[in-house]
Length: 209
Length: 108
Image (cartoon, rainbow over all chains, first blue to last red):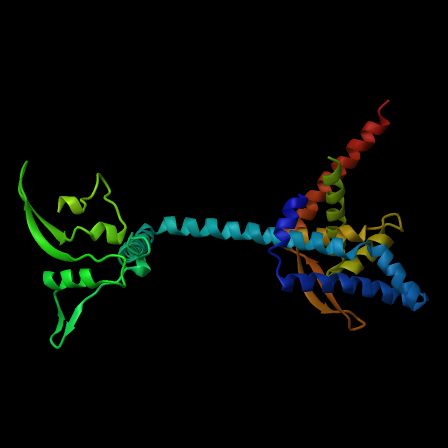
């Protein structure tokens, strides 16, 4: 019971506390008043009143615990009442549930895709040190020619490695129906520069190109 | 049996006091019980206020802040209809308790 009381004391509102403190104080004051009326000295009146009252703090705690625990019980009662009301109007309840489900579902879907595509970085180690180089001309960015790439590689002194990439579409045929696959043509240095490995098996190296 | 009986007896005394005196604050209840019992019963003031709040939450009494004759603020309590019914029930069970205890003590 004491533990429960301490827990419910966590939810006490200051207004209730003040109310209880006022009530207990007024009791003590009234006794002091009648003590004075029956001839005690002010000091004696006060001491007698406090003595008779006992420990105001512990009394306050016990009173407040009643109020708080019954407030919690009232809260439970309110929830059960709300549940009963919802059961009585199933159309409304189903509409609300469907709306919430669709709303939450949308949010989760959008966030997940944003998270995967935009928010999470590529699974490339030291991504902050990977640069994309492009040639800028008056008309805009030009695709790199292989000759330019060779020149860069030979004269390169700033980068650990250089790789080049070109998008391509291929048809995968063999067992079953043919399928269109989008792929990239890459230089042999590609995986080395990006410091990544294949999920399964191995990637090619210089000697195989 | 013990703790609940003590609590039940205090409840009974408070309810009866309010039934006979209309509205009273806590201190007034203590004074009335003391004088009506010819000083035989002294209410434990530490137990009175928890009991009053418990009874209020159970709906047996209602409270209101007001001013005393000397213009002091105090919380006054009065009996509700439910409280009056509770008073009758409590009186019944107390009578039963007393008769039972007497019977056991007189048993030869």
